[in-house]
Length: 266
Image (cartoon, rainbow, N blue to C red):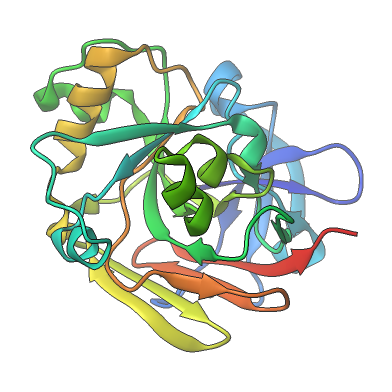
């Protein structure tokens, strides 16, 4: 099931995608959205009698993280090497504020404080219920589904600060979308990032150092996760800079495409 959040020009709504999506994440022209009564994370999955043509709506971030986005650093060995760091012995965890979240086609704003903004295509986990100290064997019990994420990073500020908060915390630095896929085996999915149509990242989730069960167990051993919290699972090698007017497209097999353009803030 694909759960989307969208607008027809009025208040945001939730719905379920009805129709086929091809292997490249492109929906058929006749795809529709069946409306839901409220946020399914909080009121359950209750279909309404309203339908909308997918082509007639604007997709938003499919989840509203009311609490936090948890990022995982250097979770692909090749990416750890390209960043000049060692493979960590345990997950390297950081927080992105929920105000950094944007949706498909929303602009990523290039901050005035930085001269080196990077894309990072990642599989994102959406948490379904409050949870703490979840054993790896029970990880699926607390996941609503998966979406595509971009852990945008001001790399020069990351080096300057020696930590991640400012570099990864700017407004618009966490695009998510296009929808949440609830029926997905995340063990071995293609993760590809394109900048202006050129392939930059080409990895697979099977190359993660710490898999999703281990990440859920580790993160919940430290903090309580709440419905709508998001875990970004790390990025493959191939990260690099973007400039204003560049278009970033991230594709994850079985989910779809997330596209955003980089802009200067007025």
